[in-house]
Each structure stands twice: as structure tokens, then as C-alpha cells.
Amino acid sequence: MIIMAKQCSLCGKKSTMVGHYKKLMASYNPTGKKRKYPNLQKTTLPNGKKALVCTKCIKTMAKTGV
Image 1 (tube, rainbow, N blue to C red):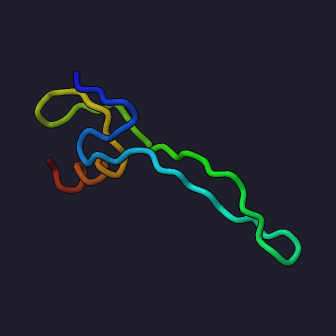
Image 2 (tube, rainbow, N blue to C red):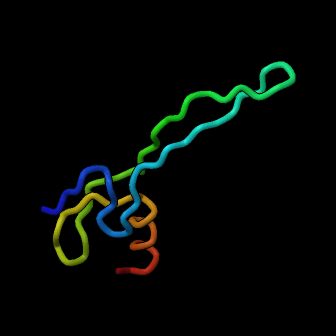
């Protein structure tokens, strides 16, 4: 079973740092950054192996029939 930590085994998508600005009175207040992780699911690949795959890749596999 191929399992990599918090990374899609097909496309290689991994976590990113995301921050946003909050409007406060007349100026923007930069709030802290947060780490966002991809939506990984345990899936059986067409070759019979199990892997952690992001949902975008699962949808693509369903469409293409791979």
C-alpha cells in the first residue's frame, strides 16, 4: 500500500499556506496565515493498489474511465 503523508499520490497536490484580509473600519487587517490541506481519500487504483488520492483526481478517473 502506497501512502505518502498528506500528498496526493497521482498529481502530487500537497498543503498550501493561505491568508486573508479582514476589512476593519477603513483599512484592512491582515489576519494570520493558515495551512490548508487537500481532500485526500483512500482509493483503489485501476492497477489494484491502494493509495491516498485527492478528490479532483478521483473525479477525473471516473470521467475518463481509467
